[in-house]
Length: 136
Image (cartoon, rainbow, N blue to C red; front, side, top):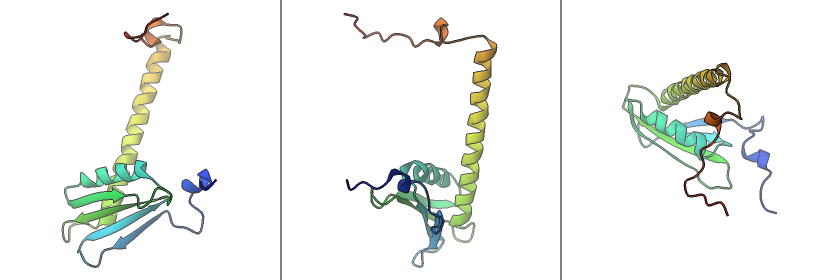
């Protein structure tokens, strides 16, 4: 089969950088950030978070080819304010904080469930039957 080994799609070898930043010589304050061994998932998250920065003029991503496991994020910032690399670091920091917040909220909800003594046999924990389900 022509499919690559699945681990080659997301594990970055030691001799290969995880992230590279290349400044664009034609457009000032613009860089292309390459994420090796990453796909739409992280590229979309980062691109959207970068675009929320008030100093960012443009942020977009692309996956050049589905069989080549890399993503490219292009970022243009306002002249002289911050660099695209700084915007990437800030966006990654905000996303990590969001993940931590989500994890804390999830733990609180699981603790509520265990404190209230609910288990899988309890009616409130069971999925409600689909109204369109027909039992023959």
